[in-house]
Image (cartoon, rainbow, N blue to C red; front, side, top):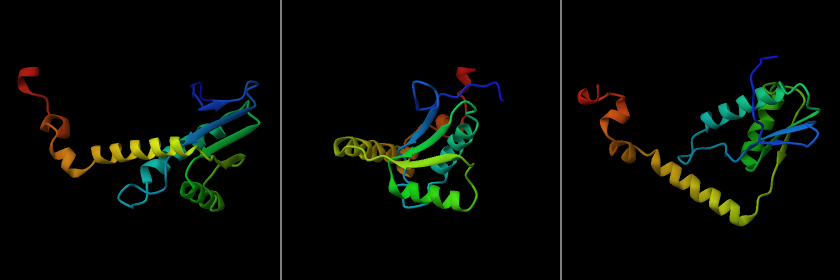
Length: 131
């Protein structure tokens, strides 16, 4: 027991089923492996594995490619036992909103966008008159 608290994305009324939900795909907008997203899922898997009072632990994914990645991780022994993966089919309108949000987030992280940021934000330097 860790003594900490983790808020699952979904919990049944009786507390017997807990779930984490991920809308992440397995690739970045640039086509690279989404390492950071997979690390977040691994963190969720850790907390699911520590849910002592739950009988059913679910990782609900909205992207089929991430489901494939998770199942591959599971087949290679890199997923705690007792966790089930589910693919959620989300409505088209919600999927479109999700894709639009991803495009906006991706644009925020481009090299051009970072170049437009003040140096203080990029390199963490405080202005001397702020000290």
